[in-house]
Image (cartoon, rainbow, N blue to C red; front, top):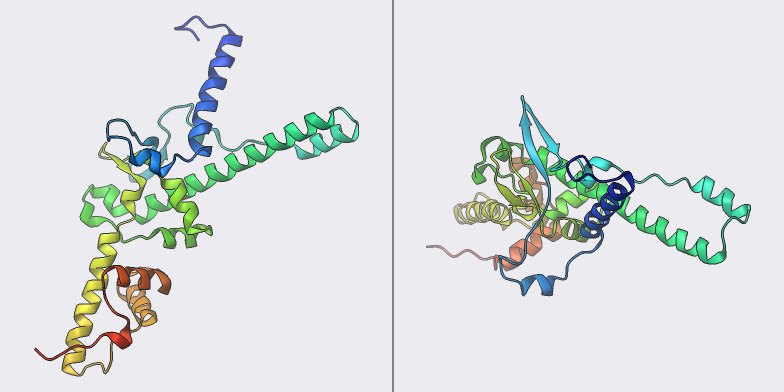
Length: 251
């Protein structure tokens, strides 16, 4: 206001414009087909926050004071609204318009909450990476596992992280999908299958491990919690047959 010599009313108009711009980024998920048609210079990720190391703590920080993560949730006084409706202060058209607005605000509140939960869990789970900046320190994390922790559907995680990025303590911008390392999970699975092959050949185990056994092994030895369905999906993508179809011949 001071630098641009804005009046209070002009500042309010400008602030409302900024709010609407940011809220559009949250509500409207870009079309995958549209984004894939853009060049890398045309499609930019929406930068939502930074992870910063303050003393010995990792903190989620907003990139500006106007960032929606700073503003928290919209508060809706439903009791007051119902009271005004009973007193016939609104027309039927106004009631419908206000109800639609409340639904949008509720959607914004829920999405903002989920975004923050995603950032919080990424910060905690990938703490070694944020400390070192070394990709080798990334913990194998699936979107399904994070969805289980937050208690939402995996598709919600996919939509929330799409085309969004954060800055690491090292000042590097990373897409949120970077923190869901498929490659590392596949490496652990491949290690389990290699060990299985040797143990079957030596007679240490009589038959290959089924997906439930692999799930238990991942949890016990590597601390990775993923569903049997996810293991089956990874196994199929790695072109590894099911346990009753895996046969190991002597060299």
